[in-house]
Length: 136
Length: 180
Image (cartoon, rainbow over all chains, first blue to last red; front, side, top):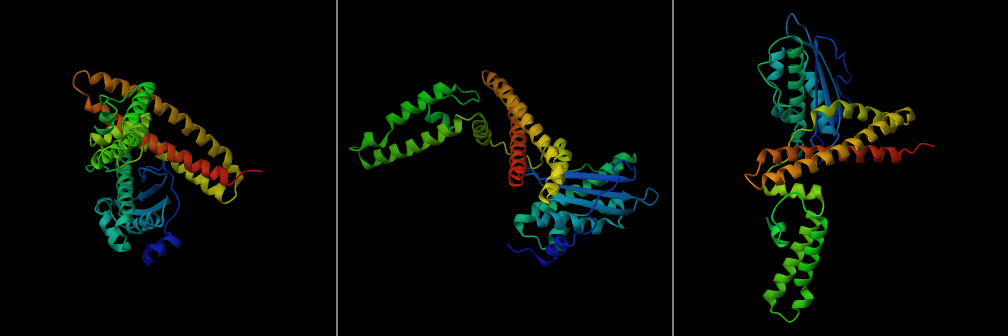
């Protein structure tokens, strides 16, 4: 099955690859993985504690092209959003944007789980009681 | 459950290997298609089917892991969609090291060998846990079967599958990039 152009673009030119200091109180880290293989996705957000806006987002994903593209796209979308807006991102938004085929939908689910895990980690660290529980 | 019935066994997680083999040989002889060469078509068909079921049953039930997997499947207890969370950090580090090795950086090798050895050790612990839970579950069969133990066993099997896949992946890379 051929990858869509958008997947290929993110795969060949992934945005925001890298990592941030986990111990920084303004950084939230989400680590999620596939159930049967060693694919893992690490996604981090750096939040401005005054405004609640995500100022930076980084990821590193070991997995297929769709998993890399999903997390790359997620970091693009996260920058400039508030924490609550970030939690509103759904895996279906990623599926639509990247035209992922049905067999690759789990990659977008992984990205959504990673976003939620990162935000919830930030909330837990910054003392905000997380209303939402991570699905991861 | 078909596999247990075929071998005349009560469903359970602990089986005696010798008894299992004896039952398999006995029933295989009894249902051997050659012994029914003169029988009618229906009888011959039945012998073929029984032989196939006996083979599948023996192959599945003689292995404690495959047996537990079959048992849970029959109880409609499906695998979790999430990997063991406490291993993810380590798996991430392992992937980083694998990338380095693939790029020809031999300094990543000792770390990968360590990781593999830890996972192999973990696998042994998992197998130990599986047999302890299996014994416990079989005891509960004397009264009300303890379904919560089956869920625990599902977790153990999923973890086992995950860890053995990791070992396979890291060994593959260690062998591809054999150091001089």
